[in-house]
Image (cartoon, rainbow, N blue to C red; front, top):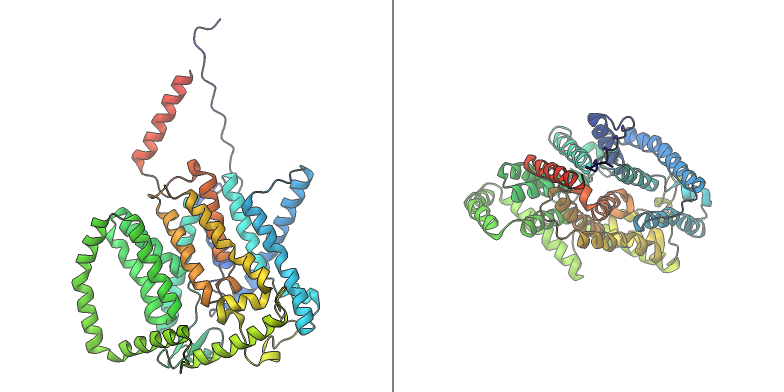
Length: 459
């Protein structure tokens, strides 16, 4: 009989499948997936290339989903968690809208389903969630990928705005002009990754006292304020940045930064009023026009007039098809799209109302259910206040929700908030694995020491 009970031998660690065994390849793959799934370059000078990439990516996404369903069926495993159940409901949503387009426009149902091909890119979010659960990718690698995409957007948007004249693209999805916004032509790039960059670097600055990170945070925010000229984007960026700082940083640290920034901010405002009074007047006019719209007063801006007309079209069509919506029109079936029936109409221009136009009230409610469910995941991780990536995701979710109310965030870019939801779901299910986004060396050593003591006790 042995006097000492030997500790069990450690189980061999399984080798990660390719390409997940290589960190750089993994981060590169995730960066490419986020760039395409988030559709941040769909409206860009590369629209044709990105559109082709979306179609190419859709094939493996559908094939992977079919393989996973077959795999589970063969294993007689039909258990699904709440997140998977929600995504399954989202997958059947376009079928009802395709029937709605058949009733509203006479479009064959098959073309109505094909019109949602970009919508089904959300299957890629399921793949990333699966890789996280399998341990093939880490939260830190996803964080790196999102940072890379944010910087790629920042570099491209600034370069295009400063060196490529947007005038040739006026009155296209890529660029437009508006009297309320100064009358000049500006690019209509998607701001999802820019929200992430502004909020992420603000979180790093205040949570880790890395004040140099305020510079990139300001670079992301400055593009939105100075060049994008979208009032909703400005507001949600400000709310996200302020929220992540106020929620996570001690009051003394916030006051210290506020006092340090007070003098430079006052000087900047004085310079702006002195040397660019027309810019001040432009922003004043923009936000007064927005207030008039909110209060129901008639604005004099071109954009306000267009959105009023589009809202009237949507309300009329929603009254006719409130339950399954009016669906989408495939350009392959009808090259003119909605313009053939309404003259000028883009559901993405009118936010939540545009969503009801496409999916009907039940479908729109199902899509908006994403935010309260994700908020439940936020509540389940509320005690973990030291994780920069987690804090960024919380306020990015808030920014995307607010943006969706007046812009086409859920209409065209469903995978953006869905990926945030998937990451929050992983955080609340696996808190021990999720940990902090970048653990310190002392923390790692403490964990190792604790593991050693536990093994010794077992022995």
